[in-house]
Length: 377
Image (cartoon, rainbow, N blue to C red; front, side, top):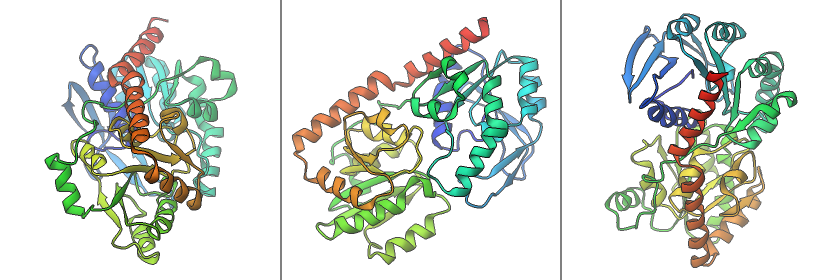
């Protein structure tokens, strides 16, 4: 159960697709999700998964990263599924009534993808705290299985009395697709030619919302550009597009900050390979799928030390201070000046970690084992 599903390509949605397309080979899987505005309920099959798309109203909330979705017929869908276990992936979109209906029909599992909001803005942080105090913690407390995508996500979100029965299941990465490719690769060359990437190139991947910290990175790149020729390639779309475009012009980087928009999974590996350095300056980041993709591609990384990112990267890259363009500038310069062999060594170690810990096959098996253990209780 999640408000969004494929072809929507957010981080949580990627996890759900990659895990359940694998589990669908052995188990009967149904995803209950939203439909496009104005469309009635429909059912389809994708990747061996039954997908129930409910009639949905989209309610835009000022400054919220995503709209609130009022999905019609959630309780009916729960009853019709007749599932052994119901897996909620976004506690902010479901009611205690939905949870009660689940408990009447089967077991409840919840995964903490979005931890307690922190360092986003006052309204979001306070609103998230109030929601969890009133509803979110009760949903978590009713769960037969609690998982989180990082230790950070669990530690900051799960009530202390439930920590002992919580499990960390990290996000995965398709390391066969996200792999180092030479600059002579035809698709990599095409991207570099299209955007004129003839200088040092940074890449940032994420929805254009304040908590992804694009503004801090742009201000850091302004200082980098005073010392060398540099380009910043931003993948993603969102409500901050015009603001970030205007900011780039204001600081004299109109031709150096390049917005590629939303890029599909098949194309994304080539964009990473067209770049020299991955930098993500999020102020809130429970577990970044983009960071895993960059590490798997053996692109050197300089990211903010926030949320679950240190768990993802370990010692395989450089860390900046959150919300600090000067710190980001210094670490970008350090990364670009670093000995090439040392960067290659660290990048290769990062990829080995992706293959050992973040393989989707292993991640799916972890979920399967936990689900089956709950269903046997």
